[in-house]
Amino acid sequence: MSDGNPIIHQATRLKIMASLNRLGPNASLEFTHLRAIVETTDGNLGTHLATLEKAGYVEIEKRFEGRKPQTRVMATPSGRRAFTEHVAYLCEIIETGGQS
Amino acid sequence: MSDGNPIIHQATRLKIMASLNRLGPNASLEFTHLRAIVETTDGNLGTHLATLEKAGYVEIEKRFEGRKPQTRVMATPSGRRAFTEHVAYLCEIIETGGQS
DNA sequence: AAAAAGTACTCTGTACCACAGAGTTCTTTT
DNA sequence: AAAAGAACTCTGTGGTACAGAGTACTTTTT
Image (cartoon, rainbow over the protein chains, first blue to last red):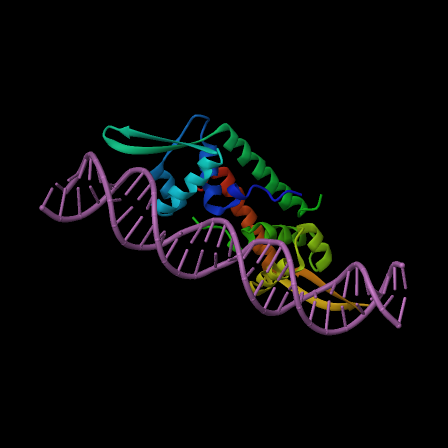
């Protein structure tokens, strides 16, 4: 049996991916909004987003809202797929206890 | 919002607790059987079980089957409760993305 | 009888990693 | 001017998952 997806399993990243997955496709969340949801520091959130970006699970867009910098985060199709698969894995674990 | 239960969230311990929770109350699993389920080493499994025992989530019974030592592991009521609550937390995260 | 293998545990060392916090840059608000 | 917000990077610390070796005892295999 697999171990699930360790990138997604981590508590903070699970929340990030769940938040993004909930949105419709092509919708994104602001860095600051995400920071409020996961309740962490700038630095920590930045690190987790970098991890997810490196895995190809999120896309990070830096743009300007007027002249204020704004970072927006969006799940990629591959990220959505990985999230869905990990949720399925969790459900399976919960139901079967890992026996297959 | 809470962070869920970090003791139970860890991948290997999640499998252990799920395996035990699946059994009826007062039912137990052998150390060796559990080791096969979670696919890890003696030492590692022992450490995880010690963590769960210290949290009051499992009870460890050392006995003899004939003259062979046998370690049996059982979820405590508190362990079952914690597992159920963490599963509820996971479901909530998955559905709401952590927004409350 | 000797060797191998199983059960279960402890200990050590390694490698990773989550996180806080400080420092930076630039901008807007007060 | 000063404070505060946005969004990073970097560093240091602490925690911890895991493998693997070593131990003690027992049963099975050769």
